[in-house]
Length: 416
Image 1 (cartoon, rainbow, N blue to C red):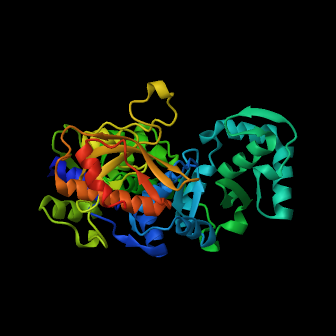
Image 2 (cartoon, one colour):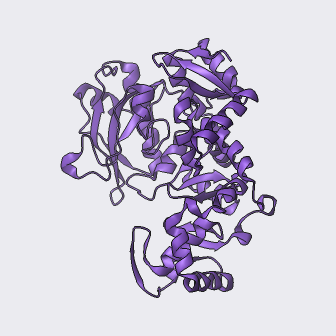
């Protein structure tokens, strides 16, 4: 197989475009929210609500005039998605049978498997309560004994979590982001009530992880399967890769500046070729402003920039610093990367002061090569801030800490 070769620019544009972030928002409405998640393959969730939750910011960057309630409606009301796993992602409901394949392997979850084996009476207590009373959350149980765990302080909390990982419980809904669990058979749509084989699960997640990342280094592909709790031996990985190349599911790619082999989905090669020709795939046509017309703020857990990918894809330094002590932070508590065109050019640290309705920008950091003096960039930044302020429900925006002063003055006209 002869690999195709792509430039660094094509690589970058494909990564962000495959995830629905470039060249602009191409989804709209509640149906667009569901389509955007399926296009992304998975959406990571987080409870922190400094300005909006990470998953909501991620959808705001993909869906024109996004309404956060639509995200939870398509998941919990319409049962199109389920949330699962230690990393906590939304996945399409049709993936659930493949996750159940892994749930049959207790060795993947030794801590929780041990808890289940050692506390059968607590699990029975929790299951019986939910069976009789309907969806219940951690706060609905007093607990029988205190425990020390990052997953809870009561034995019943750990029972709920263990049964959720095992697939006997699913999240029925959330309230203030707290989980309310119900029996799997009362949540899972009937058409998805089956357990896939191990090979079916490996085939599905082998493809899915490449779609999720856009492109991945061949040598990292086995490790990337951990996104879907898949563990494969070196021998299994070698055999599976060979089969997927032979079946034309995967195609090798050479990326400019890299000496490693990369993997793309063969079904994505036409997209790569279109981008390499300097064109935009027709399916990616924005429904609103492009990212050159209006900047987009990327979510802190955004897959194109989190986990070190900002450096890899954009040569842009970024770390989410919410868990760092103040004195060790390089930027700010909830700093977000700023996408302008196909580049990350700056960072800002926003906070919504809900009592006053003020979106306060606590910090702003331009890259050295950012077009700070370009009126077109200033316009795009002002428009992006205005859209973001409307999204989070801010009545006013405090940009007094944005520098240089000329840029601050310029964007102010979009915020009045």
